[in-house]
Amino acid sequence: METLIETMSTQLGPMLVVLGAALAVGIAGTGSAQGIGIANEAAAGVMTEDPSKFGYCLVLLALPGTQGIYGLLVAVLALQKAGLLGGVAVAFTMWQGLGILFACLPIAIVGYYSAVWQGKSSAATILMISKHPEQIGKAVILPAMVETYAVFGLLVSILMLNGIKL
Image (cartoon, rainbow, N blue to C red; front, side, top):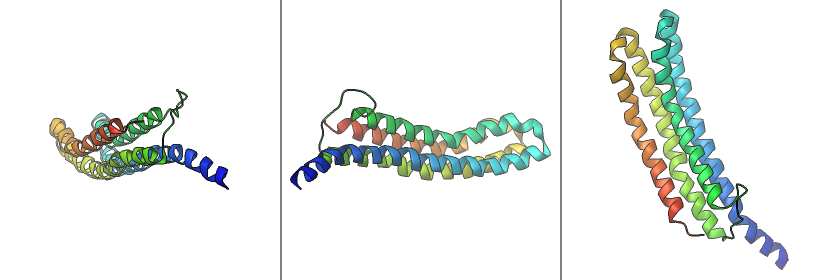
């Protein structure tokens, strides 16, 4: 029984890191998929009327996808820190693994919500360029403002990961 508990305690840290990485990718990626889907609905409507607006719509469709990329980046950094990407195996405690899991949460949570809201903002600006394509510069800036908070979530996750000593 004692061996089982020791084995579980040595494996719990890496399991928590893997869970944190999965949450960072899964939750932020889900938000990106939803945000792109929301913007895509508006783009499809605009391009039904004027297919030449595809280029404008594509720029605005891509914006909510960045949060998924940020989640992937944090997941790779977390797995790399723990030595789970084929590097040198790092010995760490359950508490350090829990710390890495918590460090992955800012980008997971903020990434999800900012991607969804950025998709809604992109949809609104796609409708704007359907009437005024010359306003594409302003149309990109509006949803990019939402991106600011995803960047904050990314930054906090990276700072938290760097603060954990293994």
